[in-house]
Length: 447
Image (cartoon, rainbow, N blue to C red; front, side):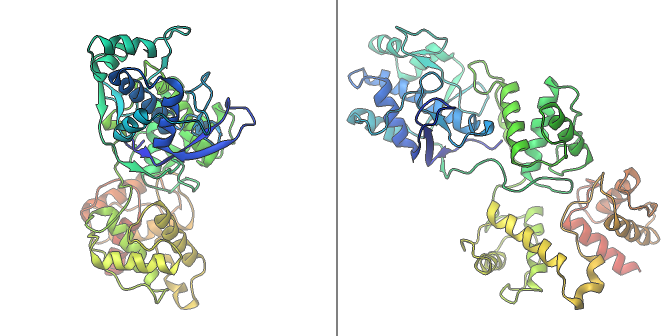
């Protein structure tokens, strides 16, 4: 899970979740102003107003961040029903003093202890309805006693709460990557489901643990997905489409109790990314090299794409190549590689592989197949890889020979690790574009 950002907009269902009510989408700050004007009185002391508004903001962000409703198949972020969420009245008057406070603090929210997710700030009016969370009328009493907003919140949610200030505002991007994840895929989205499945397996021990949450969709990941799908009545195909993605998220939220006062929570360590969210000028490293590999390949087939070297540095040359690609394929030409551009580049690479011009056919076996080759892979591509390895073995004692059987088992993985160490790459045992390219280069050198 990524660290939280404030959505620029939020979608509200004007009724209980299963009702045939209207959905409306509006700026997040406007939503908070409406709820605050509906839930509390503008005549209350300012410290009471601020404490309540912090709770209102954080409650909404918890629903948004956990995709509480979207993970259950709904097409909205929160409801207007106080039975489930907080009061929202379409078209209502907004109180001026509440509006001013919201404009100041709409991107501040409450967290608990070392957790990063917006805390589930449950609250009630404290008179006709009692609850374990904040008492709205009780905040008035505390404010009149001279308590600060933070002290008021501590009174209800504990001394270990924090207030995150000036969080960044981002566009509403669903967590589902928009493509089916399967054997051979890689990236932060794969790593997310690996980590979530491993946590879920603590409550559902028949789901096998994934030994390495490295972001590579291997056989161990596929087995865990299949067992999860069997338990939750999904088609057990071992692939993570939209239904499986959101069911994993829903169950993960449930076992972590992310929408509860006594949540296990998500820590910074759990939320940290191994793979960058976007690639842009100034970045460097393995992911940039992979991007450059794809762009350099596509440059052979599209005259509009400039030549590019794979040096692992996202400089002006790489930025220009990205812009040229985006212009070629009708994408926003900002020179930044986000989810949409990255998916398009991979799709373009696959499309070229499937329809290689005749003059390139003889080289097809040397081209990266477009997916990670790892445990569980079988077929002609694995046979070709094993053939490459055996040629390299003749000239390098550190690389063991393998049986050319088209099955990517432990012996093939160990041989790949040996080659990765030989060329200075991380010994993952999985063959991505950089490892494939290194193996092919060694094969061409030795054959």
